[in-house]
Structure formats: structure tokens, C-alpha cells
Length: 101
Image (cartoon, rainbow, N blue to C red; front, side, top):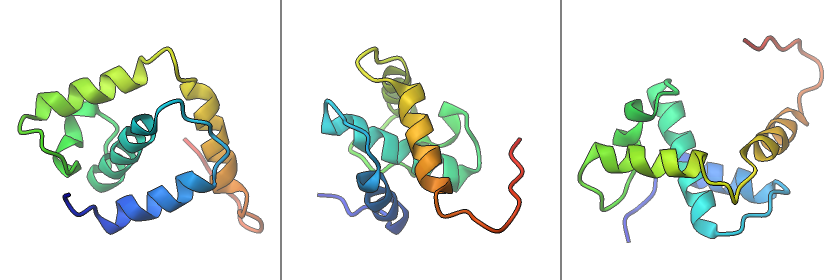
């Protein structure tokens, strides 16, 4: 099995603390790789962060298709998951002002 990055492992620990019920563990794995790609590339475009994904796939288009399928999967409530993740991430934010754009 391929070694994952430390960022991937840290995101795995963070996401397991959240109260999101995944119907399939592969959904969580795809989310982790998308988050690694967004953080590493500092970009939110699907074609910009596939290079940071560790997998057997040889073509960047395969990662893009995988991420598009994940985002359009009707079995998942992406908006609800997003709200839960934001609440978890900001739960320890106390004294400082936060600006979001």
C-alpha cells in the first residue's frame, strides 16, 4: 500500500472526530484527497490538485472524474457535511476576529 502524506493522516484524524455519517468509507477517502489537493495547491479547481493525490491512477483526468462524481453523488449531503466540518474547525476559535471571503 502506498504511503500517505502527513497532511492526509492529520486530515484523517480531524475528519474522524466530526459527526458525519458516511455511507461508504471511500467517500471519506476521496474527501481527504480533495482537501490535501486544495491545501497543497492553494487552489479549488479540480484540475489543479490531482497531482497531490497518491493513487494507482496514471492520468490526471481520472482524479478529476473521481472528484466530480464525489461532488455530484446524490447519496451524500455535501452541504450538511460542509457545515459540520466548518463548525468543528471553528469550535476552538475564541479570542480572535475571523474574516472569511
